[in-house]
Length: 117
Image (cartoon, rainbow, N blue to C red; front, side, top):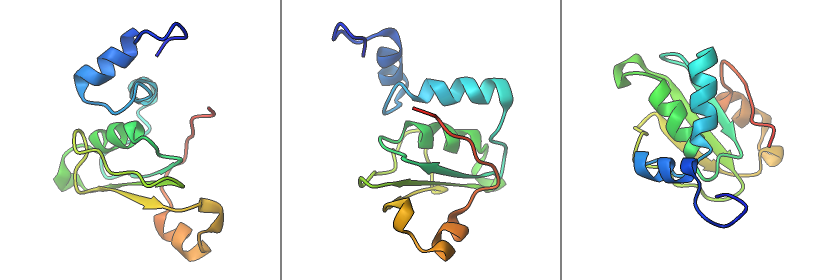
């Protein structure tokens, strides 16, 4: 929402399109420009709440039969959004700094990028 308290365009558009937050448009723009997530990719979203990037990442994987996985980790319990996500998306409620190395390795993606916010 804008500083004035009224919903801005991207907030309303996210609601209309079924994204849980307007931050989905950040990843949609990155994906449009750089195509970082391809069919069958592995994506790890650290600090995944509220789940908008999970939605965009999952839909960017392409058809279900192409495989791939999206894992979100957050200290808050995050439910995988139903819209734009499928069985390839999962969340883990944990502090990544306290996860055992073998667990992190098992969840590790092929590519890594981050939202510096």
